[in-house]
Each structure stands twice: as structure tokens, then as C-alpha cells.
Length: 164
Image 1 (cartoon, rainbow, N blue to C red):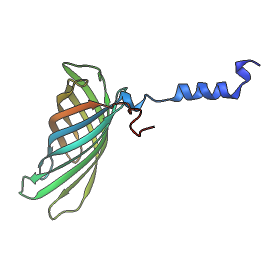
Image 2 (tube, one colour; image 1 turned 120 degrees about the vertical axis):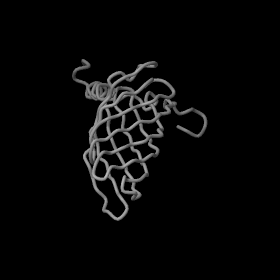
Image 3 (tube, helix red, strand yellow; image 1 turned 180 degrees about the vertical axis):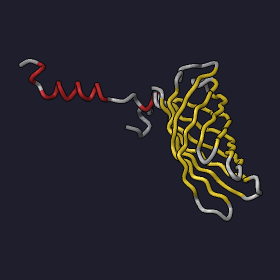
Image 4 (cartoon, helix red, strand yellow; image 1 turned 120 degrees about the horizontal axis):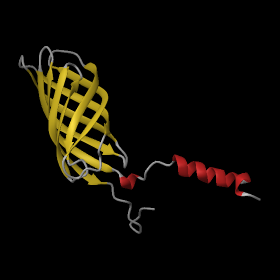
């Protein structure tokens, strides 16, 4: 019997071709950031964020910030974004990325507002342990963000410690 007629051979081939990189090959990131949104009224906020990067070129991130608008009202902003990194393996120097997602903003005495988020950014040392970033884009107005990301590679599970 040839391997072409074996269903298990075809199943193995399909699994091998469709398998995504192992989780152990990606990155976990935490960020401290600030964002300014030029709208009416303008808003300024600072906060934290978490993200996961795969072994290829994508990042999925969530971030939360609190701050004030230029009329003195307290406010907050939540962002969930997907980014495509052009040079994720760069250990030193700057690399470009871009992406989009959803932003939610709320202001004191106002309702929750959803916005489409689009951004382009530059990140220093995207394959290093930490790096600065700056972004420009739109999401409720012209949006500018900057901060620092701390990274850690996902470690494979250790055998013999109760982890299968």
C-alpha cells in the first residue's frame, strides 16, 4: 500500500502544514504607556497594557489608561489592537509596525464611546528584553502614544513538575 492511499499519512501532512508555531516560540509583553487624543475635548491618559506576540510577525494587545480631558473631566480609555511587525527579529534599532483594533473611551458626565483604531508605530529593539515605542494614528481623533514594552519569551512547559 502506498503512502498516498493511507488516510493517516494525509492527516499527518495536513496537521503539519496547518500547525501554527509553538506557543513557546512567542513573546509575552507588558507595557507602560501614555496616550494623547486630539479631539474636542482633547484627552491625555497613562496606563498599562499586556500583549502576546507569535513567532511570526503579529501582536495582539490590550491596554487600559486613565487621565483627563482638557476641560478637566476625568476619563479612561481601553484599547484592543492587532499589529503587524515588519522586522520582529531586530534586537537593536528601530522597526516599523502597523495595525488596528477597537478603542473605547469614557469621560466624566459622558457615555462610553467606541472608536475604530488605526495606528502606525516605531519600536526600538522588538526582539530585545525591552524597548521604547511611539505610535501615531486615529481612534476618536488624531492619536499619539508612547511608552516602554518589557518582553519575555514564552518558556516551554517543564516536564516532571506536574505539567504534562
